[in-house]
Length: 319
Image 1 (tube, rainbow, N blue to C red):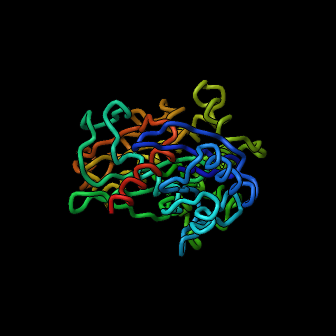
Image 2 (cartoon, rainbow, N blue to C red):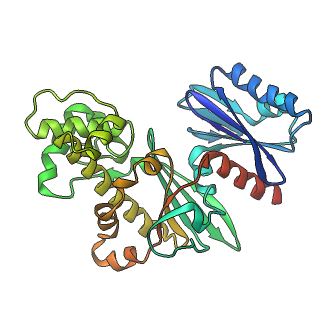
Image 3 (cartoon, helix red, strand yellow):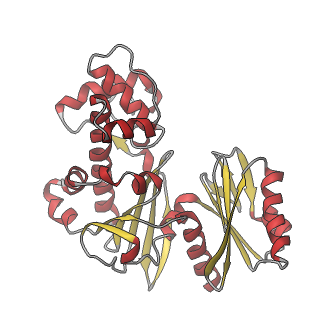
């Protein structure tokens, strides 16, 4: 199982359905990445039954265009260097969706709803470098995935005092707005890439002529420690707009099996996902009661990309 990032790749060895070994390699060039597959295969000493590689980017005709790593990886190439009979390349949020296929109550923090995630369609949202969204659809007794670009839905001011922040953001990221409206792509605020844009826009709206460019980690640390009022404002907007977007997507997908926050940002910053987040998730007008009935969780899984690739593989081989 491979979880391929722009900088590093994790390769997991699975035996009898269980993860038995995990290695980390620099992603590098395509030949270097394929050599990592080949060297692990040689170390094990036998051809794997199957290889699944998950990464950020579109999949077409058995090839994934890895946008963060700037290379194309094909199922044919993987098969050539590993000898695997079955090879699959999948989008990272296809893997993220599959990561919750067998998740238990011990692996989640419950924000709302049942202590044990029930069987049924499940929605995963991960604010990482970008904003990933995946759906695990439950039909005819088994799960299927639907991949999309949830991070590119529209985000608009929720209150009058947010209007100036969205106007300021037009000067920072004009190409990410929908025509001449105040609607911006959600990913441009609700991600590791977007939070610095939100922070600068909040500073401009507050009358600061020059708000320094800061990383998402720095902004969240200052917000948590109450060191910077602009960071506090940006983090509040981040969590409330993320909650609202997740609530909207939940109404669209009807995930009775649960809505899951996944990934490092959610896992390391659980202080963000308290009452304000839950209130924004549940604020749905005539559908507020429906939203309050949803099961809402933070996934505590380590290596959710590897876990998801494994669950995908088990399903694919069973078919």
